[in-house]
Image (cartoon, rainbow, N blue to C red; front, side, top):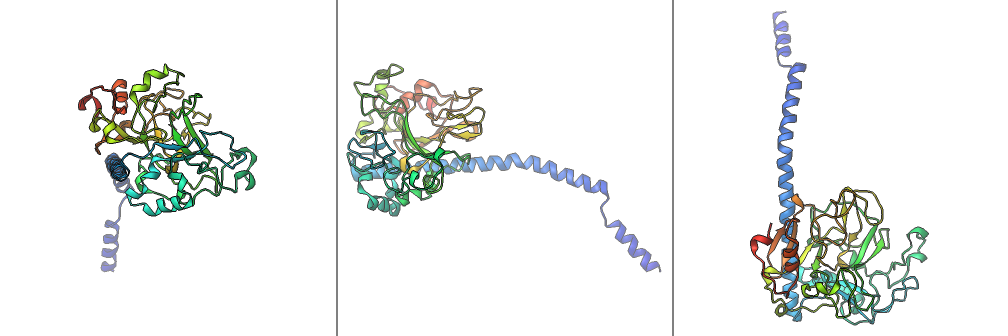
Length: 378
């Protein structure tokens, strides 16, 4: 009998009281609260490092392309000879294709030669300036109006586009991308593609994010830097005193063939590639009126492409003026620091509060404006 009593007493002493359990839970909660910010900081630092590495690979790939071709790739291939067979695609030359972006040209130099070869074999004109090849996302049937797509989503997209354009390429994706799906996918991006007196202010094309006609496109988060507005032609005299931005032409623009020798401001002070989210909004509706959080569109690497710097880096859009235009380089890194690769191969973060003038000067390759490291880097 005493043995049995001793056993029961020992069993009772080994148990937790409710108060002790609550104390333990409270301690664990405090520890989690203390550790979570540290974990988030580590994750953010890792994402930032990976993004910088991506840009490093991209800009070094552009150097290899230059070595092989004696110039950098075009910002976007927009041929005056392009002809689209799609009856629903009515933009006339010189605005009808093929819209191949600079990142597609760099594929062989980031160990994606197989993807490049598949695209080239599909149609060599995708990579040839002045070719007659149609828009890569619109030129090959079946077209969406032949595929049972809802009438409200018809956009004339061609489902026979090159399948290699669906390839997921890690180097072209920033791990800090917000992951917000958009209703639209950009198949071509250029800020200022004035190849005629029409003088386009912003030119980007999109398809609906639906299966078979855009949902599968390989995404990206990087674009070439085109200077303030790309290359301003002599007859362009549109908004914002157009010709004033002419001196600040960047490395990448429509049909550009820039060489190292053209970067007279110095490669270590000239922006080459930057981060872009396709117009991500957290407080105000996007340009199509959709509520936040949303983005104007998801960029595809096949059509990306280049962007200008005319609209700066500070958030200036939305109900509280703290969202970004689709026309702005942008990131979700801490402090909204945007990473840029410079023409010399270096990568630096630039704070959105950078002087607007310094930002414009850095985006131009031959404007003759001197800038300092301290004024430029984050």
